Image (cartoon, rainbow, N blue to C red):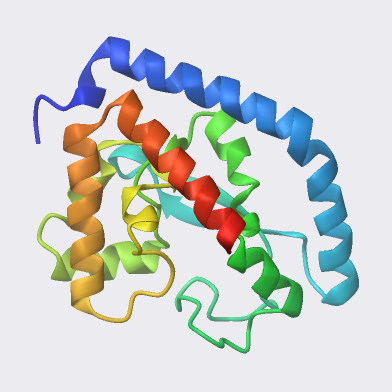
Amino acid sequence: MSNLPLETTINLILKRSIDVIVSLTVIFLFLSWFIPILAIIIKLTSRGPVFFIQKRSGKNGVLFNCIKLRSMYPNALANQQQATENDNRITWIGKFLRKFSLDELPQFINVLIGQMSIIGPRPHMLKHTETYSEIVEDYMDRLHVKPGITGLSQVMGYRGEIKNRTMIANRVRLDIFYIKKWSIGLDMHIAMKTVKLMLMG
């Protein structure tokens, strides 16, 4: 792909400035007290670390440590198998975190240090990047921009478990549409819809 909106310096600076301002605001005004509360609940209800850190593919395929609140019991399949509906690996507090997407909140740290953006294609585990790139021809085009905490495909219904090729193909189609048609207005639309969906659970 060429002549993408996020290849221009002014758009990159604009998007990065918004990412920094919003992530700093969220971290200091909200996460600074909310994450410790969730951390205590996670530690009291199951063994294991508070955070689940997983290698994922960032912009141009550069690997980074994606940070999440742990929502599962520690298990050997964490880096191989996606969570499914009624997955017995998920803790009871994990179900709550996932329902309202609260497990993704630590990724504002990834945004602040420049590994992610608030809006963008969701980063997949390395196993899935390898698998999906073999079955969807333009899958790797998703990596032309930074991955996001939320994205167009998520607010359009393609969130969570991927059950078949059609689901991942449609997710990729929406991700590529976002990359080609990016604008501040589109980011604002996705952000507002994400908040609405989070409140609805």
